[in-house]
Image (cartoon, rainbow, N blue to C red; front, side):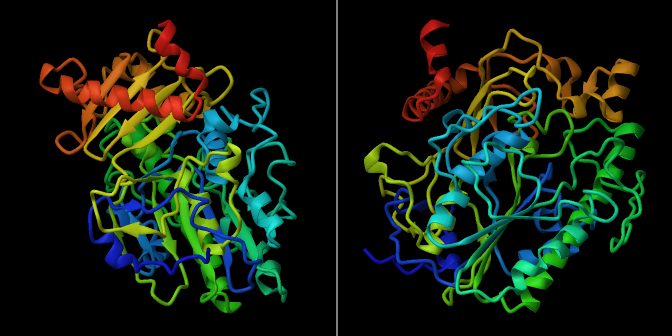
Length: 477
């Protein structure tokens, strides 16, 4: 059947937590790749809600804030796993990382691989006649599953953290005259940590913007210490460098005449590289910026509070391009849905009442699987290896913030005790409305026993439906 006309975004997003009308793949049909259906997917590295468009007061993201005015701004978007490789695999496959095989880092010594049977976004678009290109970080494997035609920005003046130069490197793709549409996967390294600090050295084309550690607003999940303030100020400088580079890319999209034929999506892989954010399922680690600007005539920007995750990105892009999705009749399941099809009827059985997150590894030695469900109000985290000490990623462990906590033996880390950062209970239940800092675990509170039981049942059902290998923990433990 022909692809249905998009429902205007403002009308669709005026109702809280609207749902997608059908599973991805059921609402798209092949019609051949069209040159007026280009896609640019921008994925930042270790960025949470540090945008002015999401309430950040630092002033680090003027270009992205301007872009947000022309986009749909999702306020309940989450990554499913707060870890680089695993998260990017979800973005590019539409499948939870426990279902696509990229359980953790791609690079050595972890060397995790996506399953060969996986049908990724570049593979699906390439099959439909798209030119598929990437710039910056890939961090998933094997290449046979993620077959990009062209790689840009492999050597950048000033180093890999020069996001402005990374944007300049893709100009040939934007300027190329072709009857084939393009898909650009644009992945800056910023604001990920560099070998020392956040890569804040002089770079060609980048205006260095610094932040005063004593004047910045430190996020609530961090300890208010001089070390944390100094490190967060450096982090914001990297966020601003990202902003400059994305701004350059957006300018080039306009300059090359692609403003009116290109879907642009901006998000991040996971939250900031600090304890209680990255590698956790706490809100600072999983709440993501999600800005979508599409060129349809009935499109209008606005805010949308519908629940969504990274698993929704692939089916959303396929619904825009009209490219064939994997056939569910042949047993291939996508774990997300297209964001372009909405309904007003909250009684619809496809109403999205909750989203699910799944984390297993970061680095190979970091075994600490978590499965999480949230309906936007309550959130339940299941720490499957709870008797173990929570492992620390190398960049988090070596950070000045954490080393200061260890050296001075600080008992508090933001709203939590340092002990709570390092040792967690099996179940964590939070009321995100009453306790946005997730400081009060309600799992043992009898007043919330019914919610706990309901959310446990939802998690088990999710793990069953997605063939989660860790489903066996329910039976044997």
